[in-house]
Length: 390
Image 1 (cartoon, helix red, strand yellow):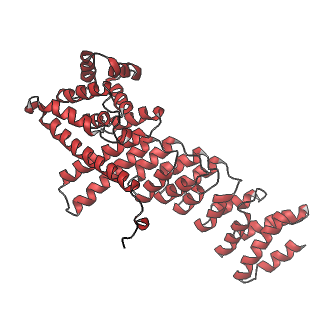
Image 2 (cartoon, rainbow, N blue to C red):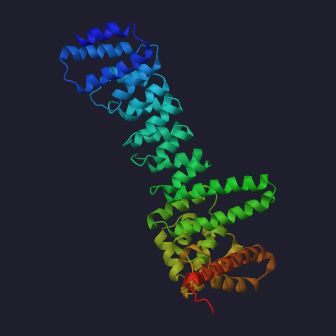
Image 3 (cartoon, rainbow, N blue to C red):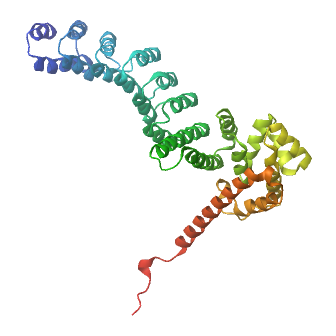
């Protein structure tokens, strides 16, 4: 019997030869036409090799058996409980494990084990959720980069909450197509917080100044993100903004002055706790008395109402038509009109609003200039093709 001879030899063979022979034994079990008795003996030999003091012997078994559905279950499960470098191949590849096995290994395993499981092809949602909940950052990164995994939106939110401050995690999340708009906005907020800390730490700006700049940049990106978000996802995005304390009058006014009417209406509906269809009807052609009541119900500062009223009136007149930048950029003509009307009011009440509108106007002018210059540059002939004067 070949296996009997192997068992006699392996007891005294050098470690290097045992490593090679162990891999050969495992491959013979899987792919050779062994008799039932030889198969049983080969399995027993592999179980005995699990006690070999050389970890490379056990790693050779793991490498040979990892991907096979015909591997002996007792050997595979024992290897999964071995040292991380031995357990990793079987946990990453073996089809013998059920979801509960993998979830338990994630909960009790080290980072190497968690990352191995995160790399599995066709990883189910339940296991992905376990990694998102208790996995280390490296394991979560492997999970996000495993495009054959099934990750629920709640699990993505959990990864954002735990590790959204890490650049590698943010980059991987933003590269995925299945990340909800709310999670993307949360990543933007994490980045803004990191920038405030960096700039303030370098003493380039005062903390309050850095916070204002990054907050306005975050709001600008949020409006741009909402303009590219499918209609069904705008409501969840607005709810996230409200829960995170970002659904401010300034953000809502920016949305309206950018022509992002959907975000503006969803924000009012969320704050006023009204149906979106009702709010949309009031914005489109409702009386200004009804709009005033809507704003009061939404809890927006009374001092901001004149700006909203003027912007809605301009919206109904079609002032947005012909403006550059779609629904992602502030509209210069709209802001100038609102600013002119608001400046005629009492400064004590509208002072902060006018200051905000001046910043909006400056931002809109700069964006418009950039777009205009980009168009000119695109239309200009190639300098290399210009005729050279004699």
